[in-house]
Image 1: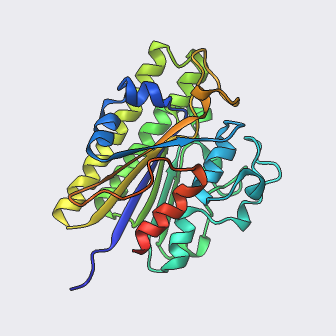
Image 2: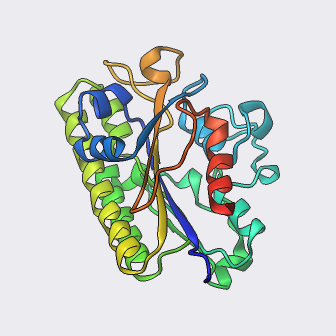
Image 3: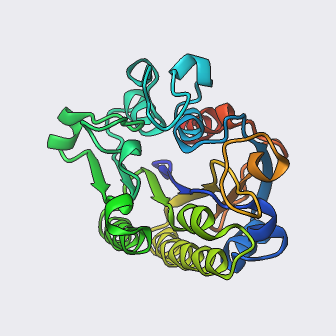
Length: 272
């Protein structure tokens, strides 16, 4: 019997306060996923900024190693540190990958990043797809909605092996209104609804096609009650990793996962 190929979708939800989203169930769907699967604690290193944090989460390299110390990406050494999707492809060159983000530095070639390598040859061959939307220019709720729609199409129709899908509406609302604002709650609910839609697409594939999917959700930092991040407070550094498999036992990862450990853990899961 041919073994079932393992697939993974890593969701990046930027600027989500762990206590508000999970403990207080500000993101009820995410909280349900954590209850059904597992919640692993994570603490990110200061400065609690998106550039450094996502670079570590997606590559497994430390801040000094990848050289991304703020959101300017000046001094980056990302070319020397392949991301999760690239490393999965290099391990098995039949692997299909998909990345979609509303913050361009994560995935857009020719900009400040990208953290996810362009891999032009694989893109031409149809093995690597990238969707970029500019939430800074067009507004994150609109951009995140477009990211969700594109990701839904890919998951339903293509089902790539390794996926990274990113939303930034919560972070944007946290900056503008603070983490204890009604607006932040609305943004959390919006991101939660996107997660639910895409999770249901994955669950349907897993059942109808007998595919082995692992869903992973994490954030790069939290927010102060008054809004903003970058410092070393518990509210800014607290993160999480929620994992869930469909119809199969959940992954046996440690209760606490370091940011630099997440990509190696996912790769280990894929290679088992």
